[in-house]
Length: 202
Image 1 (cartoon, rainbow, N blue to C red):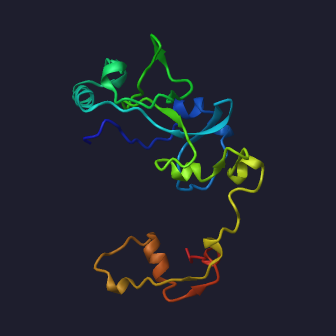
Image 2 (image 1 turned 30 degrees about the vertical axis):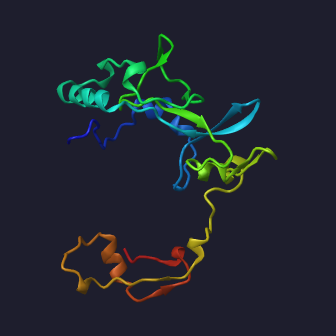
Image 3 (image 1 turned 90 degrees about the vertical axis):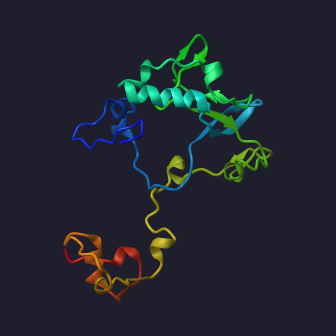
C-alpha cells in the first residue's frame, strides 16, 4: 500500500513475460543466489555480478513523492549524472537498457540495472569469485547449462530421512481443513525414508 509497486494476481500473462519468451523458458528449482553475466573483459571471458545503480537520498525522496502524486513512474525526470550514487569505473548498464543522450534510463523502480566484473579475491563478491578461476579459464555452472538433468531428481536433502512432528493439540489456532498443518498432523510422529515418500491422504 505504501510502496511504489502493485502485486496483482490475474489470469492473463503480462506482456513483459511474453516479450521475455516465457513459453520457451526452462523452469528450474529456486536456488538461493544472484544474477550473473559472462562477457569479455580484459580480453578474456569474465564473470560479472549484478550491480544496480540507485538514486541518492534526495533523488529517491523526489521520486517517491512523485509516485504518490502521479500514476506513471516513466514520466519522472531523472538527471542520471546528478541523481544517482556513483558506480565503479568498470560498471556497465545491462543490455537493452534504454538510453537518452548516451545515458541509461532508470527503470520503473528508479534503478539502472547493470554489471561489474568479478575480480579474483574480491571480498564483496566472494561467492561469485569462488566459482571462477581466470588463470585456468574454468568456472562452475548449473547442470542445465550443460544439458544435464535439472532439477536433480534426488538432491542431498531430498534423500535424507524425515520425522514428522506436528501435534496441533498444542496450538491455539484453528487451521483450515485444507492447510498443510492439518495434513502433517495426520501423520504426526511418523518416520519416512525421504521427502518423496510422504503421501498425504487428501
